[in-house]
Length: 307
Image (cartoon, rainbow, N blue to C red):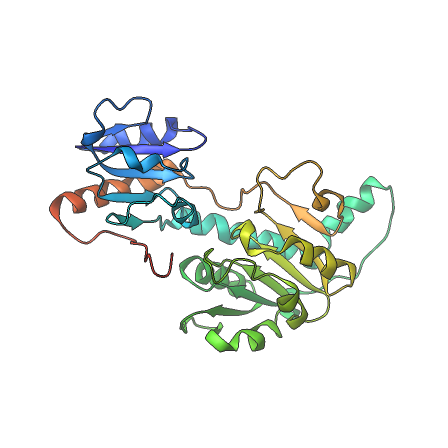
């Protein structure tokens, strides 16, 4: 029996190297597999639609990252397989550092100064201190809590919103119908939600109006969370002072997209937290062992919740 790697971009080398080093099973790609019946587990990232149909003995499909929305975007996703995702300290650490950097850059005006430098303008700007700034984490799950703890540790006032109450020292937890109360206290809003039918387009005009005037938006979750037209409007009317976006509805971002011309938007090409094959490989190997032994798998995904 074997594991199959499936990626739309076909970047397999690091994963093959990491898995083959310690795996007790064979590892294939769609280009190298000879007998589809061998495949018991697939490890995937944005696989082409219909990729799983050719493997009759598939029992487990694992996402190569923390996000799993790409799995559910395939209408042919088998209904009788177990789904898993990655929970990795390095992924969490990368996200912590990235969001902290964006928050500090915003309150110290670094993006604005970069633009002033291009214009050869000497123009001191008013800045904020960490202790004066409230940061809200929209999506206070495993990754959201890790980011919240990091921000809190350096002195930001931090709150988190999720479907269930979380108990994290020094961080106020909001849940369910407390969304509006949560938003009212966010000078900076960080989106770390899973992308589901309930959260798609949640960063919209209604939500922006619940934030304090001039709030700052950071989206490091998924592009599908953001209503892009509503963000432009919120920037134009001053409801939102600016945004840092690492994810977009279409990636790469088209050259004619309106975001390119907006100085208030800092954009990065989906690099906030990238799975490291060497770091993830041990949990993949452990899950393969558990699958063979009929044991419960690590980090299973709920089909109902879609995360």
